[in-house]
Length: 334
Image (cartoon, one colour):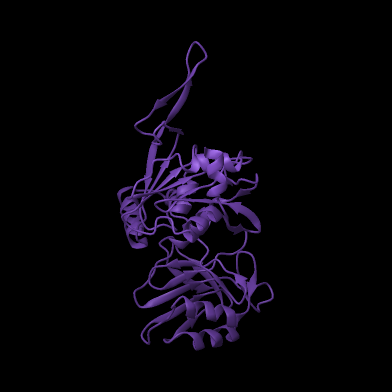
């Protein structure tokens, strides 16, 4: 019956990720199934209609890649967690603050829900153990055990699910600041705490300008950081949260290209005009009384002229080097 049903209600190709043909099966209640590699059409449809779904939750069923840092697709290819999360956003999973996104992905590391929580609006529930489906389609988290006779049995666990919630960036920073105030840590110790914080609140691609893939990290007070090449996610977020910011100033942290004619991005260099356009797009300096502070060592006059045309208030730039004090203040000097 399932095989006959498969041909009358087939699953469809829903798109591609980086030119990889990706088969994603849409289920009711905005839920999704990423079929296992090599599954037949009949097997895929049988699995798609075997889960118990709920109105207050979007179920996402997928499999981890063998190395533990990607999601397997039907054709045997693997996509990264960021691409997987982007697909969930594209297919409108979790588009409601009261809607749970349930990741039924056995052995998913914390890096996966950290990516997903940035593209959905409600909380994310993921399993940290194995997943077992009951005959009536319910999903249980737990472990598979082998008894003395060699028989494999599933043992449910009460602590097999972990909850991740989206938070306003200000709340995250406030909680982190409170935590750091409670502990008399050294500067190195504080940096380590912020690095750990980085993995629970990752930065993400904010878009592109003039065809350049630009990673821009938004800070409070309409400030922005342009990470340079070769830095890790933890290093970027540690830097992003290390600056002292001010209510009446937008801080812009970036680096000049070696030839002095552009701004360095993680994977490219953009000219001053494109850089100024990015600042305008990010609403930097949108107020006549708001200063724009360019923490860009050796910034030439050509850069300052472009930025002045993109912001509304005055611009302050350094023509020397920039040094950051332990408490996050910026000093100009040589």
